[in-house]
Length: 139
Image (cartoon, rainbow, N blue to C red; front, side, top):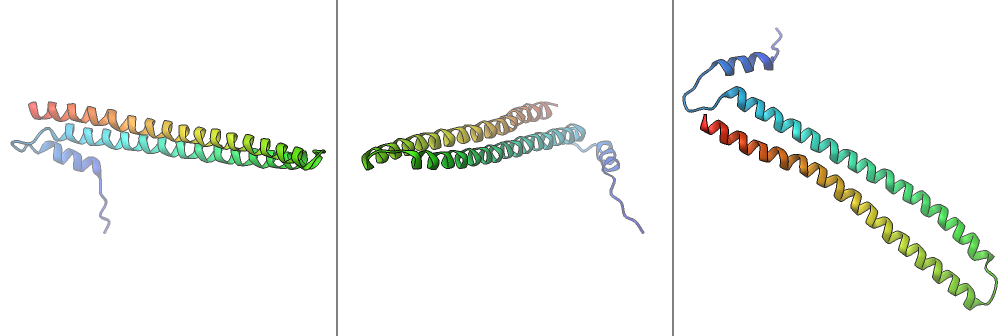
């Protein structure tokens, strides 16, 4: 004995029922479908943003490793007094710090952009849903 659920048959049954005081069920179901679509879109945007942040983090790590290797080679090639070597090392550390701050800002901007896009989808749908509720109540 198979007991299969058919959502289309259920929708037809609910649509055919007319209950006093209740809004059009088809309009309500369509609104819920749009809500789910907006959530799906927002989730997709959030996932794409997270993937972009992950990819950029990997690129940054690879770049930092290459720069560290080059910096160590440069540091060992510096000739001169211990003060000259220390000054060169301080310059390298300052440059590395500035790149790290720039990288963190870039990642923060990527996250903010991604979150903004996802929240924008949800905000637009929320505004649309409010208008739909108003029109359903007036009907």
